Length: 320
Image (cartoon, rainbow, N blue to C red; front, side, top):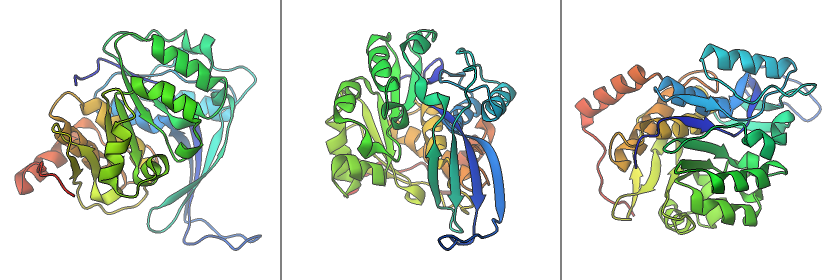
């Protein structure tokens, strides 16, 4: 697997309206949040992570022209990351309400906006070339016209790498959509709950093998939080690839940071090492408040260097 020359993110950026709370309020009641924010989330976390790790990145989704859409455009320009599809006139970008509990766990409530209207004419504006990467999430496959347009577009692309994260609503993606897309997928990455929902298997090692069988030669990654991630080694045996102990502040966007790092670092080392580096990037992100606080390339490399010096690189002995 080679390093992509460029990354196209065609999944949705939404606005994260987040609150950090000590406990859930009683039904019909109210509580004061310890912290609140309104920042770009969703695919923005993947974009920021890949960009900060040195991979040229383009946002190929839709952005609105209202207050949320304008704020997202400003944040993309600040990175800077371009977005070739013009803002959607008269519509705004949707938002997520994000509730973060004391242990860093987050819960979402999503209100969609113009981003769900991605269709074939929009996708034809994207000039994807051979040896580039395309990222999409399961949210883009839940409704029309996006699902049908993406299926057609991906099958017509040149020699590219496709990275799919099914997301928290993985079980709601129509089976026909998944069966069409999965043979084109290079990396199928998800957390343990999503893997269980799709495979029907609680054991990550067994889920890996089931889900890998759905692909046309691609690789599966199952993230397991502070324990790291599971993947098959080059011999086809399941491994739990470790992470590092982190002082968790906020887990919002951790999976997206992991995915952005996975894409940015793939092709630089062997597959086990690539997943390990993505684990460490995510562990650094959860120590910071906010959904898109991914490390820079220098920050990640310094942390990796100290870990390699202290304990050596991750082993490759199969587990389970």
